[in-house]
Image (tube, rainbow over all chains, first blue to last red; front, side, top):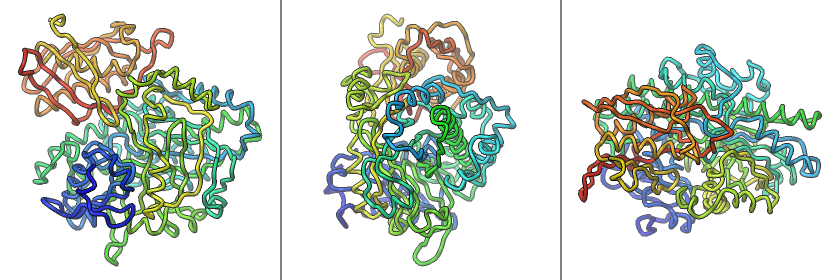
Amino acid sequence: MELNKLEKLDECLWQIQRRGGMRVPAIIYASSDLIAGMDNKVYEQITNVACLPGIVRAAIAMPDAHWGYGFPIGGVAAFDPDEGGIISVGGVGYDISCGVRTMLTGFTRDEIGQKLPMLADRLFETIPSGVGSEGSIRLSPSELDDVLLHGAKWAVKSGYGTDEDLKYIEEHGVLEGADPSCVSDIAKRRQHRQIGTLGSGNHYLEIQYVEKIFDQQDADALCLKEDDIIISIHCGSRALGHQIGTDYIQILGQASKKYNIPIKERELVCAPIRSPEGERYYKAMACGVNCALANRQVIGHMVREVFADIFPQAKIKLLYDVSHNTCKIEEHDVDGAMKRLYVHRKGATRAFGPGRKELPAQFTNTGQPVFIGGTMGTHSYILVGKKSGEALAWGSACHGAGRAISRNAALKRWRGRDVIANLARKDIFIRTGSLRGAAEEAPDAYKDVSKVVDAMHTAGLAKKVARVKPLACIKG
Amino acid sequence: MMEDIEVPYETFEHGADMGIRGTGKDILQAFENGARAMFSIMIENFSAVNSIKKINISCGSFDIESLFTAWLNTLLAEADVNNLFLKDFKVTEIKDFVLKGSAYGEPFDPLRHKKGVEVKGATFTELKVFKKIDNEAWIAQCVVDV
């Protein structure tokens, strides 16, 4: 993206002033280096978002922003239902409530020691991943409706995990307002074998260790110490979420015409929040969120079972579970008045600062844990939300590194077998059923996650707490 | 005739995901080859998939381009529901933006099939259905979310 198209307001704060049909300015939080590397499509897409009815304050792009579907990936926007605000499929994305769950194992690197390869093998055998995989859970239509209504609460009630886990999941494990009657039959039929499966693409399960602590006080609050072994799970709502997106692109496409909302890109289709179509999409999307929360809860339970087999004394605690493809109803300060807004985060993580009522007591003084996935060869980061982030971006942070090289180019450049062998030389074990997937996900195919995280830290969106490094990665 | 077309199906560049493109002597064949392009991402040794089981496909939309994504998304859904890898595709009719056709494949066999990358859905990005100016071929393409 050309820097001269933007106005620099601070080191990591850039503005696109209102012009044309933009109702608000657009804001990009990134260093000049990251902006220079951004696709021009981000500029186009974020200014399109700024044109949508009822948008409040600004259309926002995160440091990892790249070309998405309607919204850029790494796009955040809040809409006010009292001002004709809309809800958009593109603002949520296809993989509804895709997110990251991080669990504390209570073990150090030394304690896991030589058992690491066995642990990786067992996790790979136990947790279904990749194309065509199916879980061991078979759901009847009424059971699936329970999943969509009750999310991780359904999972806990069904024996996957504990009540304590629910405190450490956004929305305490269930997004209210879900209505399975708003989800198509085909979406439900696609899902009935997919609960407890990881998927493929950039989804993963990693065994990681804490390599560096940046803030000791916050690390203590999150119970993180150097050399601790943690588990991170990145996945979403599987086929159900995608089918909801596909179904509602059509429905909201018609609604955009009906309500005379000019649409500049097909996946930006939307409906007023207060319209039958908008209400139905929210209810369906909430089902997708709950499906993802249940999915990660079940996978988390499987991780515990594998650990218990190998280390009978293991007590694995959920640190937190974040989602990065959502639309949520949240209270925010708008010019001194508290308003209920529909906050869309497409490839962006909620990152509430200290004191928010949504957070469990453990994080009242630190802010919400935020997990930023890197690559299977480099790092991931753990941060906490900052109070300043609420005024800057509705309490949001980025979600990953973003690709530097397309999947096609990666396939031409690397062979899956070599990628795995190179990582093994660095003592990182890869377990995957797809060599193609390993090549597409080669570490060098991604941007430097550290630059993205540093930009976010500098901008005041979230604060760095720890850097973690993968020891083993399960890929679909 | 398929033989007339040099590259009946292929993938193309997209920043985060992947583009798929089918070429055919008519729209029907371009749609069929577009489906091949998409399913070839999901399995590395695509030719090892046998066309044992047939499923009938019917879908509709409001224009020819969105009919292409509807066709692809219906195939993905049917592949999931029937637990199949799909390999061969036949579009018998497109009339008033309603498509009728069929798809053929078999269940995943870990001994013979090498997994590729799961396609989550076909999108409207780079979505085009058109006749090439330089020859008689038709193109159907879009980006798929992986």
